[in-house]
Length: 74
Image 1 (cartoon, rainbow, N blue to C red):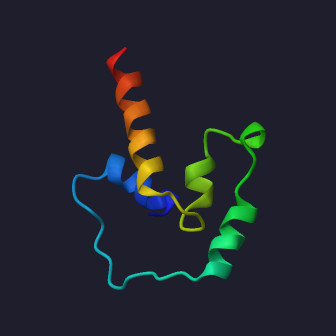
Image 2 (cartoon, helix red, strand yellow):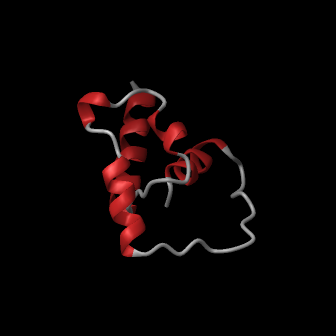
Image 3 (cartoon, rainbow, N blue to C red):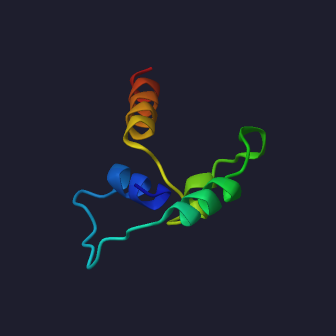
C-alpha cells in the first residue's frame, strides 16, 4: 500500500479504479526507504508529499487507522 492508497482508504467511499497492479522490486523498496524522511523531519503533509513513492505495511496501516480512530473518539 502506498501513502496515497492510505489517504484514499480514509477519504474515498469506494476504492479508486486501478487499471494495472504496481509490482515493485527490492531496489525500489530500498529507494523508498532512503527517501522517507526521519521522524524528527516529518510534517503534516508527509503522506500527500510521498504519494505513490512509499510503502505502508498492513501492520502499519492497522496502527495508523487505530490511532486515527482513538483520536476521533476523544
